[in-house]
Amino acid sequence: MHKPIRPLTYEQIDQWIASLQPNLARAEFACAIGILRGGGPLALMVSHAAGMPAAFLRYERATRTVRWDSSIAIPPAGSTVLLCEDIAGAGNTLDDCIAFLRGHGLTVKTLVAAFDDLSRIRPDYGLDARGSFVLFPWERHAHTDAYRDAWQRTQAGTRGSIPEDHEFAVYAIDLDGILLPDVPPAHYEADVAAALAERDALLPFEVLPGIGVECAKAIVTGRPEMDRARTVAWLARHGFDRPVLVMRDPSRYGDRPYEVATHKAQAALALSCTHFIESDPVQALHIAERAPLLRVVWWNAAQGAGKLVSAHQWQTAAVETLPAQARE
Image (cartoon, rainbow, N blue to C red):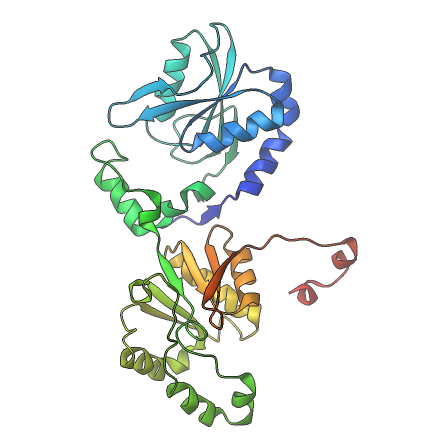
């Protein structure tokens, strides 16, 4: 992935469409038409924002076939409709769908969540994402190596099918608190050498996250790089040496929770992961804030259960006056 990733969340897209509401309402579109699947959420958001019915088209890339896939009838000839898609790409989807609707005598305007350098069509409504790789919440898997390989191999689904989204899930996991117990900080403060020896002697938890931990792509730990040799030895001794081990570079990331979380979020994104399992709830929130489309799971080893977490900013006017460092 050579372009910087630009994640767009449902909330950001919804707010953008809400900002268009006056223009969309004045246009008096007969309906918002989403191209399934990526355009579906957009058509529904537009429908709610501007009070127009939603309808859908189904597009088959292999045959370039467009068909009406809705319970409502195609609007009468002469109507103006808003065609919705997630991205204006380099392919034929928008072209073919526009031609289909125009063939029914409709005037077509377009709304896409993003257009980039490769977009053949500049939409009537769209976010400018040139110079970046847009990641949509309904296409988190598109960031993974396996999905991009399948996309290339099948030529965007025109020469073979692409597996279902969930089959592209890629996990990274934390180490301490996930595979083995955390050594209390007081032990390190009292005697670092003794605490490290205690940690080396720990056995893995009997109950681990039920994802097939040995199949995780990476173990991303907040342990500093200087601990690599003894960490590698422990993982090998207990059969966890298959995943890539990513350790923290203290020259880039300090040991405060939000710095360690930044290290983990950046590593997970660089590895094209879709999920991250974290043992510390505070770090889990920081990771979710820094990588909003990463599925972050806080794993509670004591309960043997996980919770999916997200981080949305909420602050009062009083917080606005605090210096940035105090808000971390």
